[in-house]
Structures are given as structure tokens and as C-alpha cells.
Length: 412
Ligand code: AMP
Image 1 (cartoon, rainbow, N blue to C red):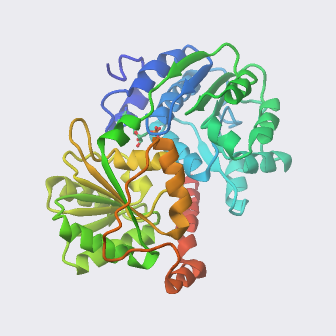
Image 2 (cartoon, rainbow, N blue to C red):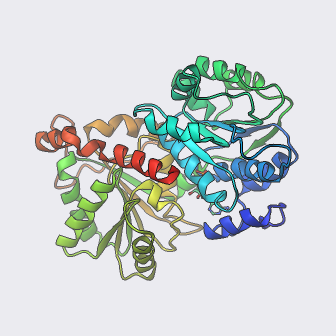
Image 3 (cartoon, rainbow, N blue to C red):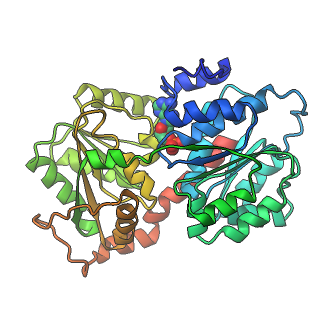
């Protein structure tokens, strides 16, 4: 099946080709036709299944084809609520990509940063808004956002919303939505509480269930190393040498971290490069090509930059930093162990990341074996003071700021 078979219009097909998508994923095959008919949807699916495209493509298409609204007014027609800033940013970036040839404007708002750039974007007029619940209510309260014209409402990762205590915020938002709308509700799990919440939002929804990506986690050999932040780079060099690694994709949480790792690997004699949002498209493409043809052995990437990287025979994925969103872990390790190939995923975990490890193990339903025999073990009582103070003085926040700046740049 192709996207064309699903009745997707040319400007979106062109955008999907630009993303390198050849075929719709199972959730896209199931959801797109239903959503194009205007049905409500209750989707049991995790991030990593192609869920974002499954809901955003039909919404973009319907908005583009709808002749009944004045495009100059730019009132919010589509509201997407997601529990975390990372997910909200990812969704907004996907919408920018899929809608790049349409005359629709989108932005993302989330808490933890000053609101100025966000309110400026809103004042210019926005068709599609992705938001975390707290900042959404805050800016609604301040009069920057009206939901009066919303025709499409999406609640993503509803189970996380509940876990994070957002239920009252969600109910407040839903009360402000017009009665006549198409509603979509996604959750990785369907507890009675979730179903109750969904029934207050959806009309008579179509229901789809996509098996979680656990299969991926089962196929990949996984190990975790307890190590201090300071020792991670030395451990990486050691493991790459010891295992005579042919090709490894190393994930770093921050762009600066990615640069530092690549530099260190270069010094140690590995052919390595970093790709992230601060690199030009050309530089990213070049590194990716070299990685694919084998001339570059190690690619260090941030999650956003690594989206869409598809390399056959990738033998190792290294989680230099553990992701705080557990689905991201499944997503990352799914880069290796494609199809029948079995891959190896190594994760470095410092003291601060132990909570992330717990969440990951809960999601994949397995304990990741701990490798104790390595030259830089951390028993959990030591944390390198030098690195910590450096982080506090600004480095740790860099990613946050630069992401925010990216956002501003994209919107302006
Ligand atoms: P999501 O579940 O929305 O986070 O998507 C997971 C990943 O799959 C993202 O990196 C998307 O860019 C990618 N993706 C989504 N749909 C497709 C597709 N039809 N073909 C290839 N990659 C896709």
C-alpha cells in the first residue's frame, strides 16, 4: 500500500517523499482513511509507530481542502495537546515537515521557558497549535489563545498525561472546545481510567490498536553500564575498541555533548562525526552518507537529528545519555536489529539517570542486564563534581536554549 492509495493529496505526498517515507506504517494505513472521513479516533499506540503522521496528515489534508474558512484570519483550527515539551516539539516539527507545501501555519508552546517568543507567534495567527497542558491553560487565561474555532482536537499520550497529574488541566481545556469537532485520543495503554477520560472527549470513535514495539526490544541484545558522567567518554572509547565495532550510532541528549563526544572519538583515532540541529543540512547529509557507505564508523546524534536515519547493518546503538522519555529508548534501539538482523544496544547510566532506566525497563517489560566488569564502574555513590558544576554554569541548559531559539527562528 502507498500513501497515494490512501488518497493523500500531491503537496503532502511530495513532503512525505522529501522525508523519505515510502510506505504508510500499519497505524497510518488504519487511521488515515478513518480520519479523512471525519471520524473520531481512539488509538492504542505508542510513540515510534508513526502515530504523529497518522493523525497529522489527515488533519493537514482536511484543513487544506476546506474552503469554508478565511485563511487570512489564522484562528486556531487544530489543537494538539501532548504531555512533554520534547513530544510537543517533535509533533510540531513533524507538522512543519508534512505541511511544508501547504499554506498553514503551526507553532508549539510549552512551559519552563519565557513566554515572549510563544505569544509573539500566537499573535501573528496560527492554524495548528501543539501545546503542553500547563502553558496552554496559562496562555488561554491570559487571553492569548481562544479555542472557539477549533475543529480538530488531538490528545496524545493520554496515559502519560494522567501519570503526570494533568487530568484536571485536560478537562478544563476540553470544556473550552466547540462541541462540533473531530477528536482524536491516543494512549499506549487503555486502563479504565483512560477509557473514562476518552469517553468524555470522543463521540462514537473508531478504535485502532497497534502492537507496541516490544518486539524490537526483544530482538536487540541490550546491556547497561553504570558509569559517572565524567567517565562516559572513556568508557565509550574502550568499548568501541574492545568490540572492534564496525558501525555505531551514539545518542547524545545535547548538541554540545554530541560535539564533545565526536571530538574525543576523533582524538582516540575513530572516524567520527556529530549530527544535530546546529549543523547545516549539507553537513548532516554528508556525514550520513559517509556513515551509510562505511567510511564513517561512528555517528553521534541527538534524537531529533537521528530521526529518519535508516542504516542497514547498523551493529551498535550506544545510549551515551539515557533518554527521559522511555519510548525514545525503544525508538533508538530499533535503529539496530532491523528486520531479521540482531543488533546490540549499550546504555550508559549515571546516578541521575537511574530513574530513567527504571521507566525504560517498565515500558519494555524487561530488566536490562548490567555489565559490572568494565574499567570505569560507578557504584552510584560518586558523581564527578567538576562536570556537575560545569553543567550548572550553563552547559546543561544549552540544549534547552538552542531548541528554543530554533523554534523562534523557524517561526519568524
Ligand atoms: P512517531 O511514532 O510519530 O514518533 O514516528 C516514529 C518515527 O517514524 C519518526 O522518526 C518518523 O519520522 C518515522 N516515520 C513515520 N511514518 C513513517 C513512514 N511511513 N515511513 C518511514 N518512517 C516513518
